Length: 179
Image (cartoon, rainbow, N blue to C red):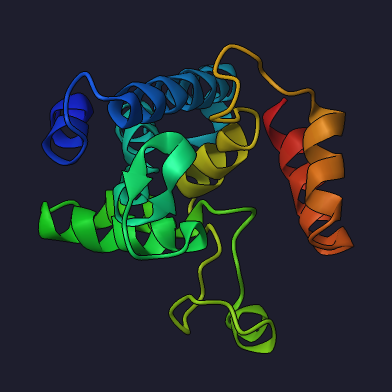
């Protein structure tokens, strides 16, 4: 078992605005994700891994240009998943890295990345495992702008609609499975 907060503290200065926001957001996501695991033992998800991965899913934000989060890196915010992947691989956490890489939105297909010319690696960036899907789903409910408020399912679905009906449909499918 790892200590996710100590890993976050390695990249985000402890006590800094970015550390407070990312840690608080990640904790909310982890709590929701673990609650899903607890409600659905039939899914066979690894509870400890879900907690750890949820706590680390946004670590790549530190390398992006996100001034409202007090992050001043060179990359676009959209890149935080794959950047976090590389960071967690370097930390010796390849499974956690996959959660990080695949949690943005509801994930991206290779075709979508190429067609939309997204600044992402040309590989499948969609959640594959049940743990990856749970963390991705739980993440959609919490904005870093308002750390206390959990979004309603309908609000999340509406937000995803602007990226395509397929994104909203996948979220609905996850809702049916996880709620």
